[in-house]
Each structure stands twice: as structure tokens, then as C-alpha cells.
Image (cartoon, rainbow, N blue to C red; front, side):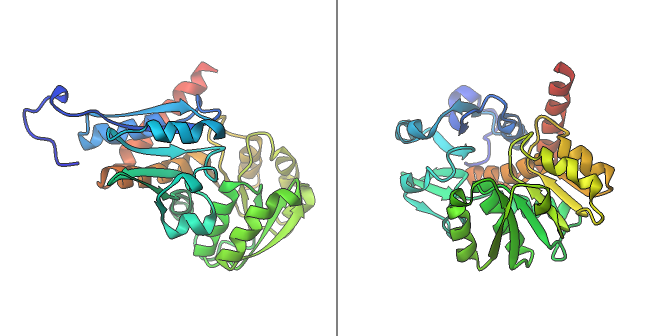
Length: 291
């Protein structure tokens, strides 16, 4: 978009739309983050909303997105479903096997994965770099695939992944092959944490409670715990990590940095990260006060 013209009112501009899609989606913090970015950038004619959408509804919804749409953010369960519906996608989305961002440009649907750079930035912000491993990931979904890619950028060549169902880890194993990362599957139990210096939980709130119970009992607990949940917060895993003195990285950090990259892709402008951070943190405080 061109810079705002002085004196031009919103009614003189065409409304530009964007949204986050997923199911469930009512809890999403993305509208707060993106709307804060638009305000800071002076894009007052941009609108961002949350739309409930399951896998069956994705193709029809994409077909309804006209020239007034700038892009979409995708969350569970759509990150893999969207790939065959795109015209082109960046190599990272191909390697990971998932896209969480759609940008509409030149009458095409372009796919990107901002989870991977979002994770790398969140880790770096907490001082975690190339000495992160050995690493254990909980879960085998699209976010786990992004975590493998992020760890690959930090120099890891082998990662242990705890899964409930090894058959359901096929996409994860294929992503590991494309990334050149050896993945060792472990059972979804306390024993899966053995030897971990970095623990990354990509499962929903409550699913990692077994790890929360185990952390205080470990002789050598992970020195870094990254829990991708941001609401409710803190999770049992986050509280256990704090009790052991681990560096704790929360899902809000991931959400913030992946959203910032989405803003850059959709608006072609640098993302106002601090403004987005303040707006998101304030909203989480409001939600906590309501509960």
C-alpha cells in the first residue's frame, strides 16, 4: 500500500481485509496484534477479524476472497490443508509441509510459513542460540514440524519427539527428512524428557501436564522450556519450568513474532513489534481479570 495521503479520509479509501482462520478461533489473539500493527502504521482502512473455519470450509472461503483481501493467517487445523489450494508457496512451507499465511497478490494465493522464523526470533529474544540442544519436542503436528525447522536453523541435526501415535507422525518424519534432521520418536510419557536441555511443547493446554509433573523430579531438568500455549497462561508446564529455574518461553512470544512477519508480508512495511507486544500483553491481562 502507498503511504497515507494527508487529508484523505477512510471513506475515500477502499477497505482492505485480512483475517485469521481456524477452528476453534474465538480465543485467538491475532486480531488484537494485527489491528495494533495497522493502527501504528497508519493503515486505518485495514480490517482484521477472526473467522471460524474448518478444513471443509477452507476452499469455499478462499474462493470468496476478492480483490479487497490482503491475506489470511491460518491456525489449527488448516496449515496443511491449505497447501494444495495455493498457487505458489515459499520453499520453507514446502519443506515444513505447512503454511500458516496466505498473501493475495497479482490474483494469486501465495503461501508462507512464519512459525519457523517466529520460533527462531522468540528463542533468540531469550538468549537461546546454537547451543540449544539436545532437544525434545512434544507433539507431531504442523507446529512440531515448524519447531524441527527452527531447531535446524539453530544447528540441531537430531531431535527427539514424543508422540501419542507413531503412525500419526508420518508428516513430521517426512519434514525431518527434507530438513536433514534425524527424528527419534519417543513415547508420550515422563521418560521422553530424558537428556533434554531444551523442551518444546507444541500440544494444547493440559496435554503436557505429564511433563509438568516430571520436571521437578528430574536430576537434570531442561534449562529452556518453550510452551506454545498462550491462553490460558501460565500452563502447568510453564509453572513447573519456573520452579526448576528454567528459561521459560511462552506461546505469546511465538504468536507475536510470527504475526509480525505476517504483517510485513501483507503490508510490505516493517512490523511495529513493540506496539503489537503491548497490545497483546494488555489483552491477556484483561482476559485473566475476567476469569
